[in-house]
Image (cartoon, rainbow, N blue to C red; front, side):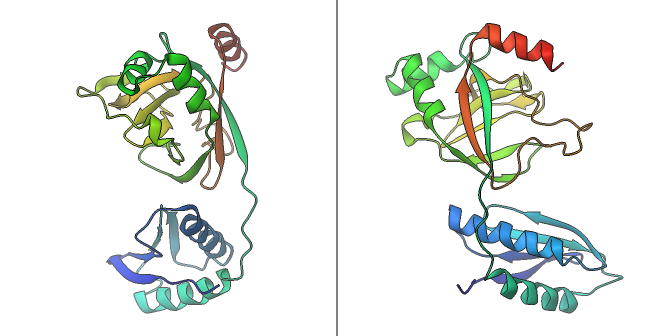
Length: 230
């Protein structure tokens, strides 16, 4: 397979490799296969490799390597990535207590779509969601795969503080707030899992390329899980 891409300087210490203008799993696979290859062949002067939906940005020390040198290194490793085998995705099951105090916007989402709350829960938890990238805030996963039947506009007035673990919908996206932050997503539930913990060896529970499955749980199970993992 021949990988098509465009290489351009982002600034004096970063270069971006754009593989496509579209967002889909095949393009995202190429991004992460290439990122893995670059990490394996990381050379002196490379400071950070940041994968996104359909592009990669490489930050480097311009005192140690220049744009021409970066370009040559990238082209060599992108050619080698063309033979990479798509890795098996890891599935991460995230328990969610839907509705009530944990998902205060669930009734509004249900009314918006002419569904019952149970129908929204069933449809949301039946999906399998790909982690395209981690960004925005530590541990925040950009998920693809939300059913168009659940696409819901953001709240007209954002909340000043959304509890960590809140599961929400915004437009055609669903996601989990890893930290307590302001936000305008429609909150339909909450997970007792910590999606980001700086004390863990791998602080972010999710990684790009993972598959997320949401599993409905009750309030009692939520409380037990929170106590056991506090």
